[in-house]
Length: 239
Image 1 (cartoon, one colour):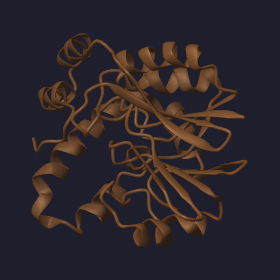
Image 2: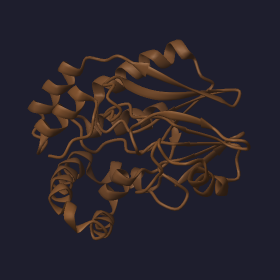
Image 3: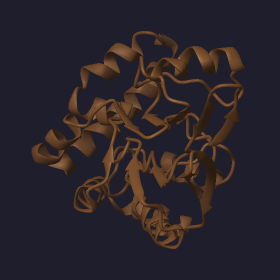
Image 4: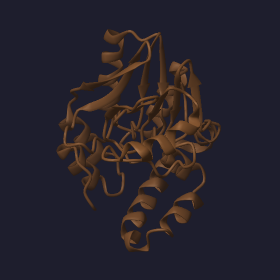
């Protein structure tokens, strides 16, 4: 069985459409989404509508949680008071996404589960314990085992960190999908994961970054220029 996992679209319709075209070539048997569908992009409602129309199963991400339960951002922000300026920017963008989505789409996001189990694979957004914290690619084997062995599946897939990688441990394969819409690994291309008979591979997809930057700068999203800069560089930077 071939399973594609598409995560962290973040309202980037141009990247999403490019990935859809690549999926038609890859022809997986099943497509799942890894959450963080709408926030921080030019097209939050269009992305949610597309995922619903396609009927993809998936999981709730931390920004999905933030949109349906705003206090979750406040709770997380209390742990890092030195980053309050960043969290203020994030909340201003989240308010835009909530307004664009409307209650019906928010209710759909609210109903997303925290995990999906298919065959040998377990999918979570960040970890079994948290939607907000996950190991980075530099994490040691012991940390990955501690976080993902509890899923009790031989293949653990997650998103959240926007930096794709695959780590083969003795009894567990851990893989990160990267991000469709907002890459942080220095490669601005969209990223998703294809699992072929339990073996994961990262697929990178070129898309028209300039077009999406123009979409951002005309959609009235607060701090759109910040997101546009990260789209261009493929790296996280402070606003």
